[in-house]
Image 1 (cartoon, rainbow, N blue to C red):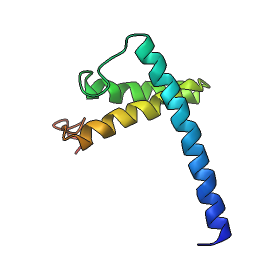
Image 2 (cartoon, rainbow, N blue to C red; image 1 turned 120 degrees about the vertical axis):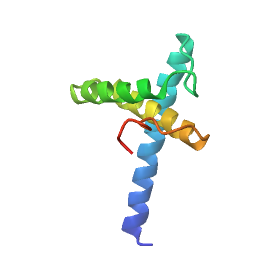
Image 3 (cartoon, helix red, strand yellow; image 1 turned 30 degrees about the vertical axis):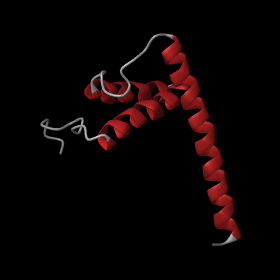
Length: 94
């Protein structure tokens, strides 16, 4: 591996660590507000729809929404790893 590649990997890892920290801060705040259901109770299709709204808000300049997108994506990813059906199953998106 070249020095340039190592430097790039380190930059990517730093960015991911910073983003993960922002995600954890947002999730902690949600728990403090009483939000639950991240691991299955809250419908996956709602999470997917919220990602769409979060993308628009992030593009409009709401910096917190990027962490919200990451958190919702993590929730969907985690559910799939646990064996849940795909969000769009049966809706013609397979």
